[in-house]
Length: 329
Image (cartoon, rainbow, N blue to C red; front, side, top):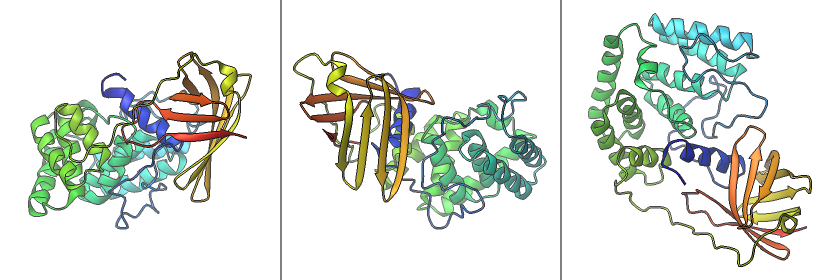
């Protein structure tokens, strides 16, 4: 795998889309009212193949075509209201935009900024965790450009810092503060906050990733076990993988169809909910299976085929999950 960057977030997104990894947002608690946000932050943000998205820069005046006009209008209104300091109105307009595009990370990240301005740090943390699970977040130019002046932002940052000092055990506010420091380029201050977050909750995967990005040598308590997939003894041919496969792991069931025409269908069911992924597949002689989703995300897995049994190890997984053991139907 390459350095942190895109690879880590791509692995996260694909792992959830295929049900290989479980997703836990430690800040999506009962105190967060998601009913008005049109999104459940206890679930990952995964776009479907037919969804469009705004430009990465929310200040861009040239978003992609074919986006819902109502969403664009609501988001434009939200940005104007935020710029004018009417944060309650900005939140309502942002939620209206999310109703049209519920999986757009740019709008979600903007929502986190609005709730930060409103000093609702629990909601801001829940939203940010979901956003930063699938992407790096904005840079300082983008964030600061949403304010009429840096002074307005600085006043809100000082309010958050003051809150954190008075409430040192409030992990949500510290997570928001770490994000603000990272975005503003205050790396040493960000590292201090992230170290505290990781120590308090070693399962906070986003804080771990942010910390390791800033300090690759940072000590991580109770790191996840590393699962090293074995290598096949003989060269692998595509015909060995073709067919219908099924598996059960923990509380989830999986179905994988690898068709002769190189198309695949993957289904997994957890807690009675089924999700399906489609795309095209190929395998190399070393048994590395590439499954390209319709939205261009790619699952890479080491496969070990033994007759009607197939071991499926997701490459790049950092959570220490056991492989999925498939049997041919």
